[in-house]
Image (cartoon, rainbow, N blue to C red; front, side, top):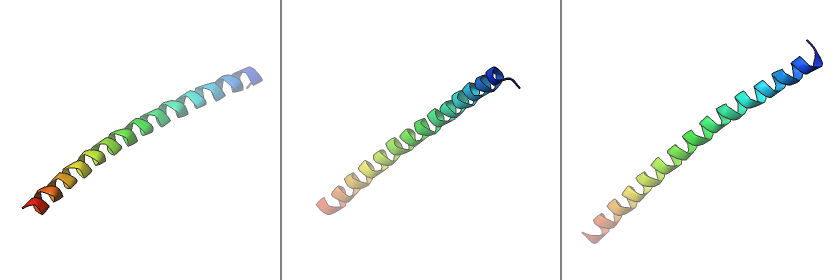
Length: 52
């Protein structure tokens, strides 16, 4: 394989890695948001129990 071909392959691999990383980051952000919602629900529940 020529140096140019190898360079193009490196570009393709980097782009694929960046796309996969973006997907994982988006999934982590959704998980963080869902966890934040659960924590808020939990806090509200505890406040309700304390007030009772």
